[in-house]
Length: 329
Image (cartoon, rainbow, N blue to C red; front, side):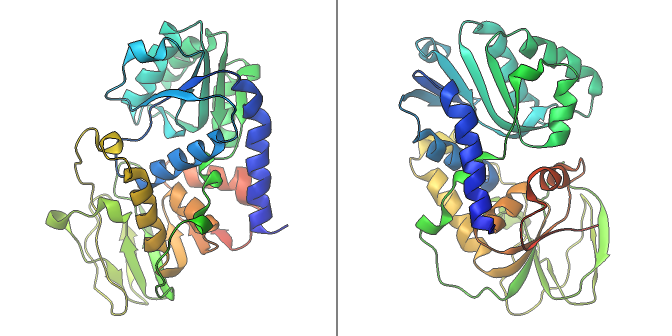
C-alpha cells in the first residue's frame, strides 16, 4: 500500500468514527489565532473533514474571544485538535474544562490530541471533570496519550484516531516551482525542544516555520557537512552555507485575533508552509506537523523527537509502515 493509500485509509477511519457522532448543527472552538503552520494544517484538515457532515457550523471562535451566548443554540460542541492537552498550554485546557462543566447538556467532541503533563498531579483532576460529562468524546492521536487517559476516563469516551491534518489536500493547493535538492533541519524554538547533538552528513538549512521568522532576532543557521550541531534552547548560530537561503526562527508576537480577523490567513499560512517545504528534498524535523506535511508532500522525512516523545509516539502509532519516514535514534 502506498503512502497515499494509507492516508486515504486514515481519512476513512476518522470519518467512520466521527461522522455518526455529529448529528446536529455544531460550533467549533479553540481554532488557532496564531501563525503556527502546524495548527493551521490541523484546522484546514478539520474543515475539509466537516465537508462530509450534513449539518452546519453555526459559530467558530478561538480561545481568546469566544462568546458563550453564541454556543447556547448548538447541540454539539467541537474542539480543535492538536498538542495542547495538559499543562504546557494551559489556557486551551482550561477552556475545554470550563465548557465540559458548563454545558453538560451538549455533546462535546474533541478532535485528536496529544496528552502531556509536566505536573502529573493535575492529570486526575482534569480527567474527573471530563469523565463527569455524560456525552463527551475525546480523540487521541497516539497510543501513549490513550494509555494515559485510559487510567482516568471511561474507555467508551476515548477514540484513537490520526491527526486531522491528513485531510489536507496539498495537491490541490498552488505551489511554486522551486529547487528541491536542499536538506532542511526543521528546528522548533519553543518549550518543546529537547537537547540533542549529532554530526551532519550533508549541508543543511536550519529553520523553523517561516511564519515564525522575526527580523529583529534573525539567525543564520546554515550548517556545512561535518559540522556538529547541538540543539538547545539557547542554541548558537551556525555558519551559513551557499545554495539555499537561510532564515533563523523565533516566535513573533502577532495581534491577538489575527487568526480570525483576516479571512485568508489560514490558507496563506498553509501556502507558506507548502512553498517552504518545496525547497527541500529531505527534511529532518522536530515538529510533528513538519513530519505530516512532509508525508503529504511525499518528502523523505527523518524524525527528531521533541522533549516528551510526541513525534516518536505518533510515529509508533501510525507511521511505521510508511515509506521514506525514519526515526532518528
